[in-house]
Amino acid sequence: MGRASPFLRGLRSFLPLPSWWIIQRQLEPGGRSLLDVGCGRGGPAELINRKRRLFSVGADIFRPYLLHCRAAGIYDDLVCCDVRYLPFPPESFDVVLCGEVVEHLERVDALALMKSMEAIARRQVIISTPVGQCGQQAYDGNPHQAHHSTWLPQDFRQLGYAVRGSGLRGMGGLIAQETSPLPEWLRLVANAVWILASPFSYYSPRIGGNMVCVKNIDGEGFKNAAGEPVSSSRVK
Image 1 (cartoon, rainbow, N blue to C red):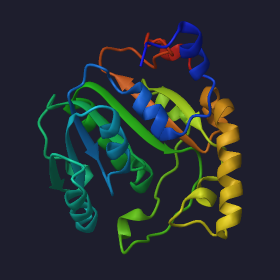
Image 2 (cartoon, rainbow, N blue to C red; image 1 turned 90 degrees about the vertical axis):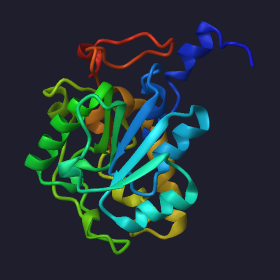
Image 3 (spheres, one colour; image 1 turned 180 degrees about the vertical axis):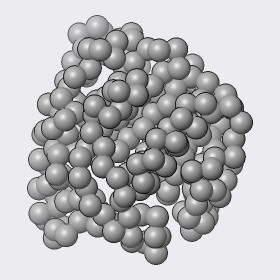
Image 4 (cartoon, helix red, strand yellow; image 1 turned 90 degrees about the horizontal axis):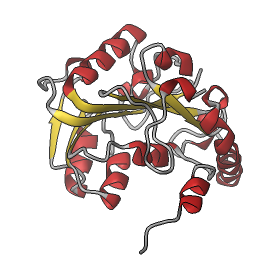
């Protein structure tokens, strides 16, 4: 397939943007290795692998998730550990991904985890988490699924992250397949609302249901449709 024109590349920036798409789009292009912290069932890494193959390691404390990832062949290696005590040396991975994890920790532990991930990453740290309150209890037989902290875009901007949003605030629990209280047909409606809201929350993450926070170790923030860096100060 030929290279997209500048017009098409610009148009893509206005499409509905789910969190996994944002993560995939902002992934450091020169990265060759990925640590997925709190990998769960490996969904984001599986999507990333469809477009580009990185040497990837999944880390999680819940062994059944790791067994699922091993059977599915998602990662090159798996480590069973508490994410509060990551057993990896500094600058050992190009990219450190932490999807839907920090909200499961007490705030002080989550902040310590971010420092740890920034030390482990050579190029980039990517974090995704709900915006604001998103209550969740343990499920899947996994006590670590309960939420213990709440985060807003400004929390990450103060730590030097660029932030983009997706969905609509307050709806995260309604679209989650595992925990939604809605019947299937209403969950489909909620998902449609989430998608329709995403082009707006992408640029105004404070109204989003979820946010993707990126810190490039070289100091650059998000990239535009042409792959050029966009200063964090321009991300609202």
